[in-house]
Image (tube, rainbow, N blue to C red; front, top):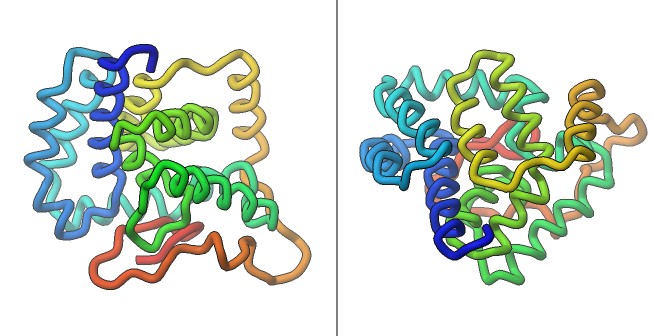
Length: 225
C-alpha cells in the first residue's frame, strides 16, 4: 500500500479473492474461467503464486462438489467463519458496535454493498478493497489478525481455500509482534459466547438490508442462503 502500483496489485488480488470466497451460486460458477484467467494475469508476486493453482482447482470442481466444499468449510465450524467480528466478539452484544464501524466505513467511502450478509463478511470487505479505495485495503489490514487466524484454521483443516486467504494476507503489510500474540490468544480461546438473554447480538441498523434476486452465500454465524 506504499505506492499506487502496490495498491492496484493488492486491489486486484482482493477482487479475485472476494469472488472465490463467495458462495458458488450460478453467477459465480459462470465466471470461474474468467476469474482463473485474471489470476494468471496478475503481476508476479507471492499472491499470484498462491492464487493461480487455487483458481485452477476452484474452476475445475463440479458445481455440486464445490458448493459442498464451501458449505462444509465455512458453514460448519465457528473457527472458519467468514464473519470477521464473530471471532473476537462471538454472539455478544458488543459485536453490534463493531458492525456499525464497518458500515460507517463503507458509507464514508461511498460503497454500497449488495447482499444479505452482515457488514463484516470477509467477501464483502474484500470486494470493497477490490475497488481500489484506500479505506478498503486499510479495513483488511486492521482485521489482519482475524484473517490470519482464519488462514491457520483452514490450513489445519487441509482446506484448499487456505491458499486464497494466504494470497490475501501476502498482499498486506505483515503482522506486528503484538498482533502475532493476539492471533495466538484468539486461537486458544475461540469466539466468546453470550450467556445472558436471547436478544439479537446487533441492533437493527447494522443488520443486512433486504435484497431481491440472487443473494450471496453466508456462514451460519452471519448470513443465510
